[in-house]
Image (cartoon, rainbow, N blue to C red; front, side):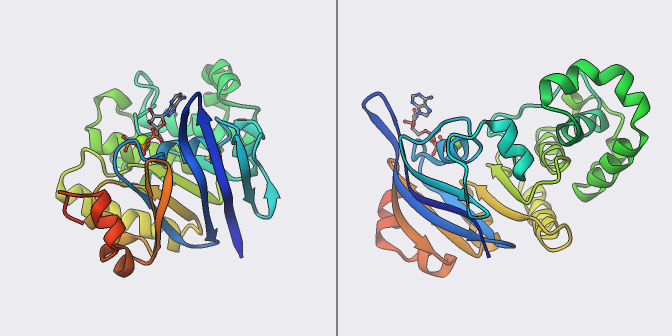
Length: 254
Ligand SMILES: Nc1ncnc2c1ncn2[C@@H]1O[C@H](COP(=O)(O)OP(=O)(O)OP(=O)(O)O)[C@@H](O)[C@H]1O
Ligand SMILES: [Mg+2]
């Protein structure tokens, strides 16, 4: 079944066409990669899908329903969650609390009210805490549940972002450079984690990543952007050998 369908999605910022008629379709259960050089429009695609921006033209459908122009909190409720390229955690809160905050999104109207309710609500919501602990186990952070999130290593903070996104119980999980700043061992572990999230937790995953080995090993389908344009789409075996992709990444190993 088609879960997410972009059809000629376009957004202009003044004279710049950041995303230009980009089309791709993700089926339920897929592990999908979105790649391209710096400034290609990858994060902007996430911003379009999550309602941060409204497309200038084109359509974005989630479960067959048009979502372009829908506000971000409504899109979150429909079942799309994301992590951020620049980590956005509540540094003073514990690892567990950060995930609980994510869980509030499901129960209340948004992150703002979640924060307003935080001190009393955290005491009351034992159930949310238990859910959060289970998610921390998924991303191998249960052992640091009570550590302040700003004291975590960079790689751990990235994994925490994933747990927090999952706390909203999304159908589609968008990961913006989840392996950035990780060492090779952490990247390998993350590959396993993302696979488990798809296989055991029934999520569909769309991820942006610069590390080609990571993307090629993990993703079944890849769409490649360059200067806002879609230049290729297909399985890793095709993408790896596509002359347009090689040219876009000139000098980089694909
Ligand atoms: N709100 C905005 N206003 C103006 N220009 C923007 C805005 N958001 C993004 N852009 C521009 O759109 C282009 C695509 O940016 P985007 O962040 O999507 O790239 P990216 O593929 O995620 O790159 P990177 O790999 O560096 O993260 C860039 O030229 C960027 O400067
Ligand atoms: Mg980006």
